[in-house]
Length: 188
Image 1 (cartoon, rainbow, N blue to C red):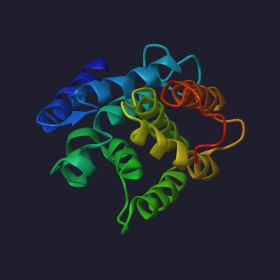
Image 2 (tube, one colour):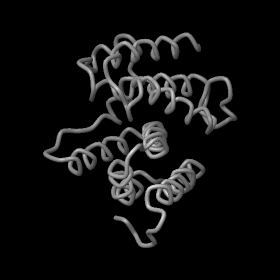
Image 3 (tube, rainbow, N blue to C red):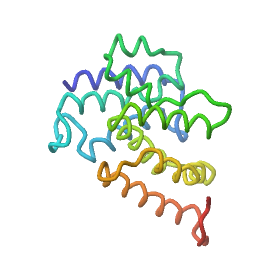
């Protein structure tokens, strides 16, 4: 089971090999998303009864592949062929949709995530947690801060992933104090 996760990591590492994320090798971001899922119990070795091992494996594989459609020349067919329908479905769901600006792209993507279901929400939430946690500039942090209300309104399901949502809010609070130590009001 873990071999397929390692295969996905290596596959993504090769595809992103010339790219960086927050100034670091791209694979570090992918590892962070995988580690976030693991921290919240979404790993085949520690499912904690949340979801079954096979589903956790699909989530972990998708964590490594979640940006390949947006940032590399790979297509959905290749993902499906190499990693299966379930992985392709999740990776496609969290990949930015077509739109004329970031807001439109996110609206399309959030709708697709909702249609795909809870696993896509979990994956996108892990990605967002990683992005906020490792924001390396005020402008990047502020972009996510401004999007947070729409992100939560679109994807929050009461009673689901509440620990992850609380963690994200805590990250926003701590990162906000880091980037804006003397600011009090809403930065949106």
